[in-house]
Length: 494
Image (cartoon, rainbow, N blue to C red; front, top):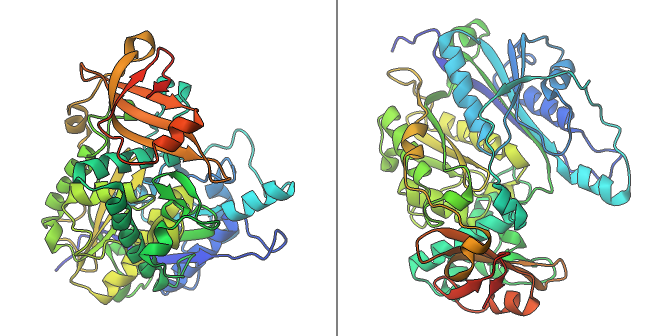
């Protein structure tokens, strides 16, 4: 096949974990990224980092450089014409690949370095010890080019009820999924234990995973000092693990540039297709907690663009910050979680959850596997927010017949059904619970009940309770479908 010289291709990938003994030997995020880029350059067979015309960094949570791409470029000794940073969100690494592939194909970029890192383990250790880290920061007016869609995902009414964190909302998706599946609480916990045990065994075989200790289903589900309940029904081992110092990098370029740099074709992996989309911005307006229509549409579209069915995609990495995320994704894409290996890495609990950058590790791992299986296709689904923002990519070491193809089908998703939210006196009265969670104290006590409820007219309303007796009661049995009362300030009464 004669390739268009502007065809985008991945030529090198790198991953780096740093397990510092303390603060003295810790590495800042820019240093982690530098290490990952140098590994990626070596992976491509280059003598050092390429003279990229664009350095694109995934948004960093644990340290505000202001313009992290400038610090990375300085460490690499290169002077790119573009210094860029992604929008926040776990979808952003795949979105960056999609954007970069489009820019390369259009001729706007020839060689790009994509990188991301978090040193959140060190950052939190320093906070606990009362130590001020001396990592650098840029000037207030040093602004990178912003890539990706900034999306407001927190409605004022949600903030007023204190419903703002993923650890609160993903468990609500889980209870809705459990009810939809018709499982008892005990049966569903066993189901989750099996899924997450399998995930831990994938991580055990991944040399780049943070936790390589395989867990049994019983270890996953049994509550204890090292596995406290966080947000019912999720103990700690079912939550994303942000207590990591990890970096990853991808080097992308045109086929023409790859040949010019002398990168062997056995190292090339091609993005075939990509899509980006999001659910209705606010969880309050979702039609249901048990489906992700944007994943259904965005996933189907990327498969169509690549000319394959989900059953013809040999390698999968489904985003797995919490069990509900991967179940929603698998359900939407048509993936049987018991029949297929759905993670390449061990996911965010075991490979590691470096906030927005996990999918870069997934893509890097996928690239390595695809080189070993040149005719295979791989799909990466990346997710941000509260199962809100989605990015999809299909890859292969075999070049695409029609070049990289991309769509952003947001208009179709925006037209899908949504619910209105009732608040204040308008929401007072009887309501049926559709999804719920109970947040636990660090001492292991249930302390706050959170419930998404449906009023008789189909509108949604939020109910919360800080009554320990109600919180404890809602950890016993199935509460989806139970009729409760809401007062005018949103307090849940049972």
